[in-house]
Every structure is written in structure tokens, then in C-alpha cells.
Length: 159
Image (cartoon, rainbow, N blue to C red; front, side, top):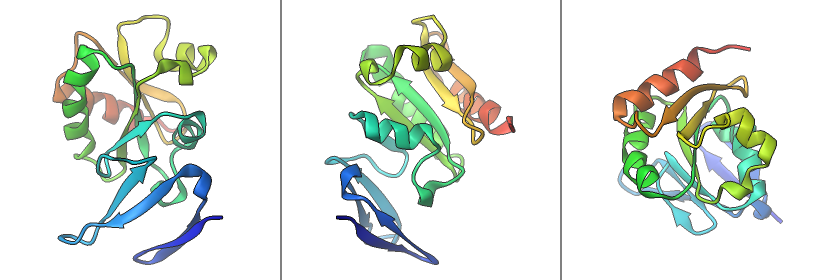
């Protein structure tokens, strides 16, 4: 069973199977996303299950329609040092989110190849609103500017 969630000027049904709870931030009245107990603010989503990943590969839930998704894979020192920069870049756009897939096995082999290529140097792939990857982050380019560029490249793509 799901529940109705009201956001100013909209209402939608959230299925319980997604484990999503919308919390109200008292200071600003804005929504915060909690997925399976991981509250990371509105810019970072920690994906642990395939159903959660499918939602973001499709552009996010209805209330985030048109979102540009930066998909970060893995959980090593490079990834952890890059995440704050990715979040800073996500905050620069109204419709940006960073989806962190710590366990790359959640991604199918064909998806990994399509999104990240065959190189282990690629940490992140940015998926545009058309559903195609349009920007990439490699281990040697992990600054905020690099993340901003990857987001803007994906946002410039139109299917």
C-alpha cells in the first residue's frame, strides 16, 4: 500500500515498494528524500536495489520529471573524494541529482558498457532527459568544474 504525498501544487502516489518517505524540512519547507533509511538531502540518492536504480534510469520519480541523473558507480577512495564535488555541481541546477550505486553488480553488464564504456577509469555517467549518457567523469577529472561540465553536456543533448 502506498501513500499520497502533497507538494505545493501537486499530489502523487508513492508506492511502498520504493521505500520513499518525504520529510518536510522545517526551516525551508522543502522536501527531503529518504530512500531505505538513507537520508542524504535532495541531491544524493544512495541506490542499493535494482528497483530503485530502474526508477532513476528512467529519469526519476514523477515529482522529479526531467531530472538529469549523474550515476556514480563504486565505493573506493576516488569515488568518495569525488562525491562532494558532484553534489556541489548538482546544486547548480534545479533538476540535477547524483545517484550513487556503491555495488556496481546492481547494474547489468550491458548497462555498464553502455553507460561507462569498457574503461574502469570512468567513475560517473550523466544521463540526460532523453535517457542517453551525455557526460562522463574519469578518475583524472574529478573537480567541481568537471562535474558541472558533465552535467551541462548531458543537459545539452536532446533526443
